[in-house]
Picture 1 (tube, helix red, strand yellow):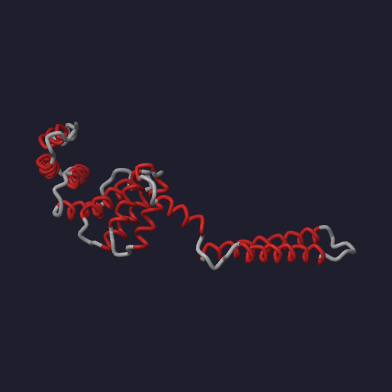
Picture 2 (picture 1 turned 90 degrees about the horizontal axis):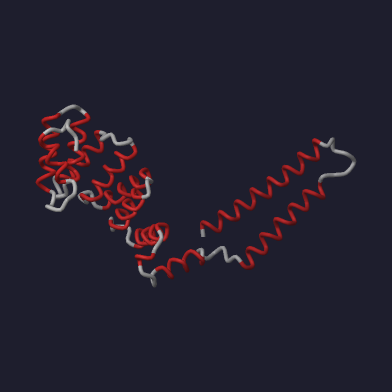
Amino acid sequence: MWSSLAVLLIGAVVTAGAGYWVLRAYRRAGGGVRSPMPALMSCGIVAVLGLGIYLAIGRPELPDAPYEARLAALKDRNPETFTPDETLAVLHQAARENPRDPLPLFYTGQLLLDQGRAQEAARAFDAALRRDPRLAEAMLGLGRSLVRMENGRVTPEALGLFQQAGALTNDPAPWIYQAMAAMQENHDDDARRYWGEAYTRMPEDDPRRDMARQMSANPRRGG
């Protein structure tokens, strides 16, 4: 319904703009002996005809059928075949249908962050946390988004999120980011400790394991 009203509003603005340009051109031409009213009336007639056709066949009182139809068609497809935009559409619909469920918003944030849309991802993770303040994965996602927005710098706000997430999950990532924050402040002892905490949480096949072990011994040596 809102999109239908938006179409009508845009049409009204365009029509008004057309009338304005006609009148301005008439005045710049010096007015002449002929009245501008025929041209202005033509703009009005076109607008009325367009509105009449839209009301006759556009059904402005109904939701956008093409969008709803696309969503319905997606439900019959394998989610693995979805494009990113299709996945976002399905997640948006799921969030609307289940307003208290944080997971559609969390997965939206993950997808947006993977696309490099850090600000939008941060909003999605924040919305997920408003629904479940103890969702560690959303804390971690929001912290990562903030770091991405600051070009790799772990801000105090992001650090607080990583600290909270570290207390709720065995994921090594919160400890890696805490180590990064300590290194940025030249707190080498803290950095070694955080790298060590990350190392103990990494499975044997984690490709970051050697780096974490080396950094826990000497954070300034790097990988």
